[in-house]
Length: 67
Image (cartoon, rainbow, N blue to C red; front, side, top):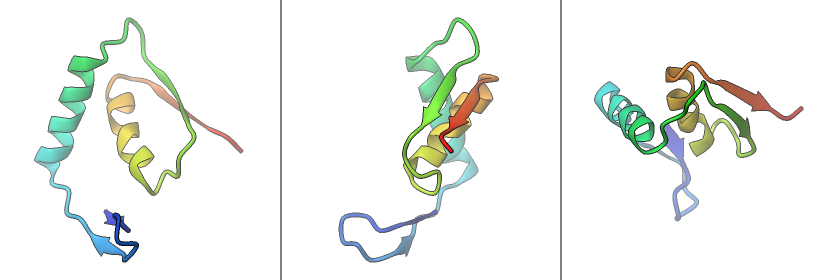
C-alpha cells in the first residue's frame, strides 16, 4: 500500500496477510452485524477506505460507490 502519511511524500507501507486478517477479525468483533452490511464508500478506494472494504466483504456485505 502506498501512502503520503503526514509528510506528504509517497512511501510504501507493507501490509501482510496476517495484518489484514487481524484487521478483519477486529472489525467483525467490534461491529457485529445482524445481516450483511452495506457501506457507502465516500473516501478514495486507494486510501484507507479500500482497506475497510475487506471486512465488509468478509461478512458478505456490499460496497456502494458514488458515481
